[in-house]
Image (cartoon, rainbow, N blue to C red):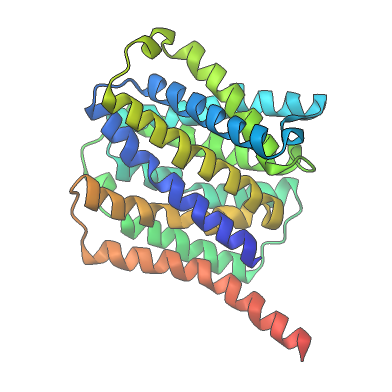
Length: 293
């Protein structure tokens, strides 16, 4: 589980930069769909070049694998990311993140229904700590004046992301994570190019190129590939719980980059999230120690 934990935390750290990068993109005058168009295109090109130079066999995929990646990239990922970006355009990043981070509970319930995952006391305690921490991290989110449409988009992002994580575990089983990452990103790039603006490539600026490359590399190649590796090793439900370090990263980056204030209550929330991640690993370590003695 330790290796899956490390992958999930690094992935969540990379994903945590997305909300801040998207906010910077909006400030630079970029459209949400165009940002994702550049993100996935740059991500697919970067990862494709790496795989081509490292091992060309990683670019090969079966017909069924291609079909599943196409559905995930063209439909599910497009819906989830579109909802997330549109929510960020109308409501605060903290509100969006708070709603999105209902997904560990949703994924745990879906895993119980479709993957026969056993929800024991450790899982319940971990989920409770993580969700309580998220609420404290974004304690003032619902005290702000927000648009109803933005909240609907945020809930849509949470729902689609939960379904996406379950489908990844079911459909991409047996596929090499880097191969799956590349083809999902290719199809997502196609979907966002169609819904975005093809002519945006003809009007590059220093800001749009920098933000696009950052989105493609950090919450793109790094985050998605490591998330698939985490799901492969520990399953989607545990990957979700461990990935809940993301709002802590978002909080820190929002304070450092956007100048958003951080209060002690939010620091306490971050501590609860970390505790919710540590507990299952501590229990696993204790069980392993007992088994060896």
